[in-house]
Length: 342
Image (cartoon, rainbow, N blue to C red):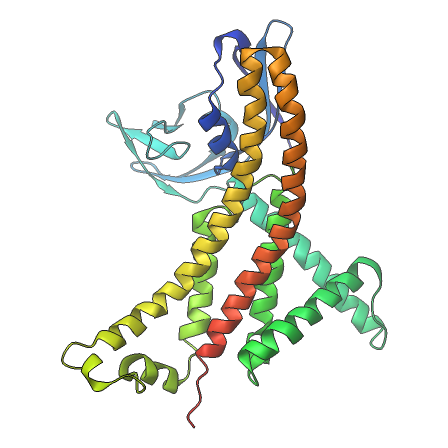
């Protein structure tokens, strides 16, 4: 893996922007920033890991290049000009300049969040293949150490979430629920690590939580029983005047079909993003008061670091809780869709 070092402006010419700092650390990126070094002359150098950019130009078709070309501003490749937008509605997103206007191209780039997803997936594959290999070699012996802890978590999800919430058909949905739990849990924990291979705010990205919620939506509704859909549109327990001539109750029940995955999406996104922002806010206070005076910055720094450490400890718990809640609610909604005729 190659590191790139790019130059910057003089430190004295830069002004600290709290909003840019906070959202710059929580936003997706085309390169993986490692650190920023300051030379003796005050010039800053950004050390980062370049990632592959895969875009479809309006005129030149699909193009491939390294994200390091975007760190110096616009990049021209085969007559097509690309840059990171500074438009408030598209800050940090890759755009193509066509006739002086910014146009969003088809973008399949391996961004920081995508790379974090691949790292998490690779880690989980190694863990569970190792667990499978252990049971093939020792079918009557429980694993120890880290693999033993993983087995305990698996049994907890199966016995305390899948079985009670779904019922007799729980085995059909257990692989998905286990996958989504460990996937979210791993991403949450990786997001807490400030250096590579962690630090990406994946589950605090609305696009990621939307995909996860959409998969749960499919499992909830596509494999639902006929009685579930009859209850949605007929609502047998409601009085007739709520169903005709204006179908109030069926309409509310149908809206509920979409609010369930929406709740899954927003809950995970909001909680993880809020946790990261709170930690960054306390870090920002050090710089804000430090610009006033060094003594104020040092005093606030002690408080901020201690509180940020406390929040980091809470985030370890939050990372586990949010993975559990997403899995639990998905199991509950799946169980509710398995209505059987009496």
